[in-house]
Length: 506
Image (cartoon, rainbow, N blue to C red; front, side, top):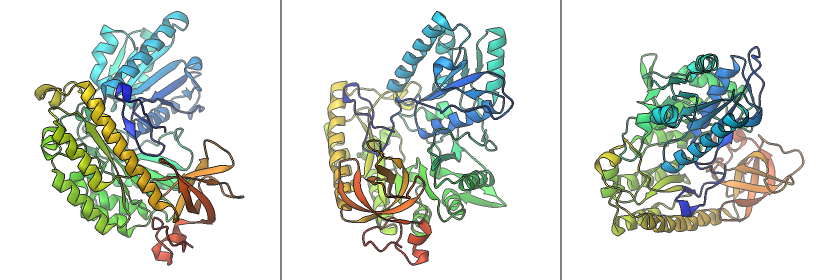
């Protein structure tokens, strides 16, 4: 995933390693049908967050079981499905331009091509896409993917538009095994809940994804267990508000902290990450799981959105600046060395110069390792669109976003410099993008490391790497020795994997 650095159009900007913005599409790799072939193929292109990627893998699983193959590209496909993001206007505009291109291609040379929109835009813009602009043949919401085979057949046979955007109050896909085509065979996403109940003023997720519903514990543990058996070394558990996960199981409540603990028992060699967490649900119980379970990565994406309590109140974020800073301090006391990333919005409704300055001062207080930074984009139907005025000029938004980006770059670079001279346990993901003679991988705290390739080390292996130098985005190191997570666990008498430092890793 690549960062987006296009400030002129107010795209999101990321300091995170290997981060892909919501506007950059990705396609699932070609794959043969898992069921008896029906002779047809589908090309699936995904915009947006990790949840959208996970949803596309579910779609591939559903269609594959009905005989659909995944196509290499749109030119060889019978169906093109665009899985969409509606978080920001920029993402919607880019998807709509893509749909215009596909529709023109269909009209010029492939009249039988079926074009479908999935996900958040499908639910929100179904009338516009189908009836007003007539860009697509089917519209399928995020809870209706099981209905895709029927909808495709209906549209193919009748030529009539096919629609299902009904949202569910139950977890819709708990028993489905995704097709893992968007992974490197090392890391995988596992969705554990859907929807959101928070109703933040700027966010469309509750309207496009529905209310929160958590997946059964047993189905999550089963899926992760299958990934372990298949050789995966890292999972990222996903939810719109992942740490509000809660279910009743065997007569007792299972919280998110308890779920992570149970996942951590499945393998001593499986790193565990999660996204995205809400500050109001980041409990001390969860922090102690980070401390006590060495495979739970000491890295939390903890979106603050803004540094002013007054703006946070207008955003309906349910916490204050002081509450957030206290949480960060408490986390660092319980889990020494923990790293944070965040989301920051510049130019929210009514934002003053003084309120913007409070965002900068909060960044100085926390000093995030990574951040996703945005200029505010009003979304229809949200509380902010209905009740507040988007009154900060675009030029001011751009200027404030630039200040936030510049400061975060300083903090990210400083975070990297602090690691020079220490040792890190790295999960190897593959060759460096610049040279096959180098490998790349991530630390427990989600820092990217590039180092010269030693003989015998491969993707999926763990290695102790000495950090010799850094850039603003990457640590540059030297291979020390292969290792395992069990070998560097405090339970094994070695250093904890994220402590690095002394070179005493077994």
